[in-house]
Image (cartoon, rainbow, N blue to C red):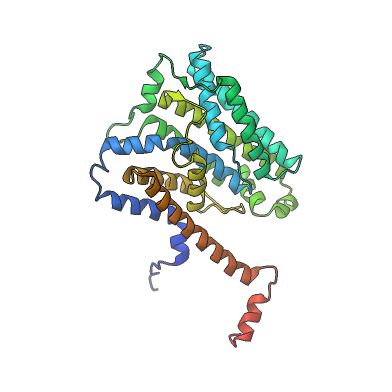
Length: 340
């Protein structure tokens, strides 16, 4: 019996493109001074952790066949609420974080109901919610930046490296645990499989008896809650939060969207992985530590995004040519060219 030989195919490269992207960044880092220092890795991954929470929420919704454009504003509101409730109202960190996360659950519930009950396109519903959230933030803060106050204990913990000899902050490790939990839910529970099914084919999901409206609402709830929680922790990690948090340089929303696409999540839904998005976001965080200038960061990230989109477009075209709306189209092509 002959041993199977490893074959490097275009499909294999495409499937693991997020890991290839990360590997390229790590190779380039060999030629960058102090790239592999503990301080640089800890700072790069720590500063990029907020977008991991956003990527988590965005990926969950996109797998379900929708886009949640509120992720950046939801995280900012979560940060402002947490800092305000603790520094101004004197609530413990745990209570402030819980309230901020529950507000995220409420926003996600409203988004889900707008999509499932009022039949609004998710793009329109969440775009409108952006303005609601931003207006709420202005009312709550008066347009001013909020600070952590005098209690730095929890902030110091999030900035620390709790595992010896591993240069990852506690904030980054908490986000990684959240990614693992969602991965387990998606891969090993009925609810996770249902999200993939409604995103891949809503009619088939309905025929299978899946409560698609409930699953869709829950996808938006998970998205908003994860962003609110991530924003709350980011506010404590950074020590301050403002309404324009994250709007300088590359928008966190665009980074989350880019990483989701690079990670292989289909814009049409039904395919994707929060782990692959996580890998892509780590690669982007390390890339930003290599290229200090924003224009170079935008250029490299945009180039990779374009390559992924072009490949997906060509792959979809070839797939539709074979099993598209005209199932016999491929056979007709072969017959015309004498290959049948």
